[in-house]
Length: 94
Image (tube, rainbow, N blue to C red):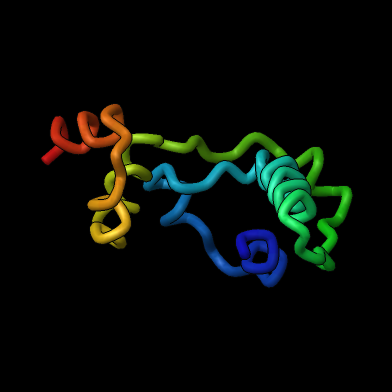
């Protein structure tokens, strides 16, 4: 998603400022997802240009913000979580 958005000249400034995007990791993250798709038996057909492998370091993921944002988007999913660490992290922030 982000590679297409950036390639079309759209701004990802908000994602960068909020700690939701690391441009320099888009290529490796894509490759990880491709391997996972193959492992699960899915077909993959969207290659990423080699130039993304050496993208400039830009952005830093804020893991706590991402955890809280994903909870606010899908609390039903998190209600089924039995992972004590995640529940503990959420209880600290709420």
